[in-house]
Image (cartoon, rainbow, N blue to C red; front, side, top):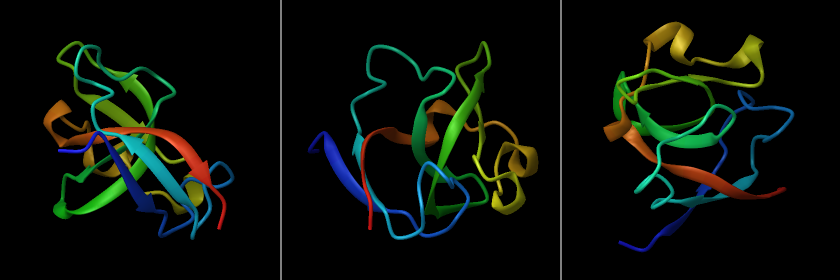
Length: 101
């Protein structure tokens, strides 16, 4: 598997940091040796619809390694407030670069 992947932002849940139509470059190997940290922007599988990918900011990491995620735009974000913590196995990687649409 190639370590970098490109994803397109589909909604406004991460505005103003990421806008709908922006592209992000994701490091899939970012969490091989160390776990995610508070403040990281991550791509992960939606716990309620695993075929769908979401992009959110890590709010907190619990002792088991699961992360609580939250969108920057509270009014438009479905995140850990709705579906709870995301297990480490659901993480795709860390956003390392943004390209504005």
